[in-house]
Length: 258
Image 1 (cartoon, helix red, strand yellow):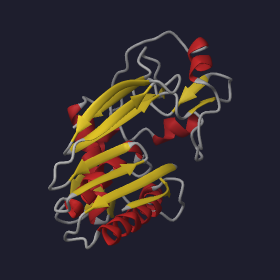
Image 2 (image 1 turned 90 degrees about the horizontal axis):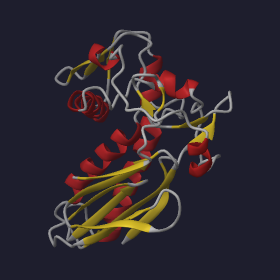
Image 3 (image 1 turned 90 degrees about the vertical axis):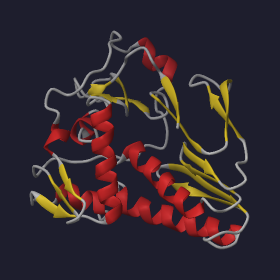
Image 4 (image 1 turned 60 degrees about the vertical axis):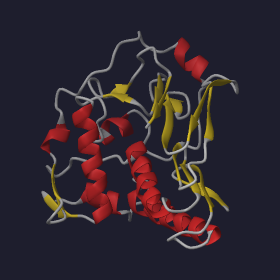
């Protein structure tokens, strides 16, 4: 059973075969689809009534959060820690100032054109402010403490988390695949081998092919959400925390397997 629908600013799909704790394949796929749509409403910064938007706007230092939000904050802090601050979910203000304040359906400038006028390539680095270190999570109390005004961006970390949660729901089915707009989670008791094709960021060529039975794959790059900022400079949604500006490192796309 395949359930496909728009979500997270792109296309989402849930594929389930075989019956399991979540019901038959159709029931399980529809159940997972409903969960994803609920999470989209609760964790999108573009939804003013979402839990994420309310948390970002809350003037209190310590705020009660839902169990899934607590897991998301925990995941963002872990990502920052293990990357030495290169993955920083507290840069929402910089992202909006770069021109990503509203939902983007796709690139408004081609990657080739953006690279022609991009600044000199340089490695990224952690933010000198490292504001993620000012965040603390109390899982037992269900609260997040941070300076008022510090805002979170859910981004790809949230989509990966949602895939992991649904993997726990669907693990005892024969096979499943959850595609959260490019963040893909696979599994199932049959350990079905699936082919993962990575497309070129410049054209439709397949650059790499992987086989995955249980695990996850995600590809991110600087071409999918790209635009020209107010000053006519090329911009995209992946920031260099050190500068708060879109990163131009010489790498245009990366794929992670887990």
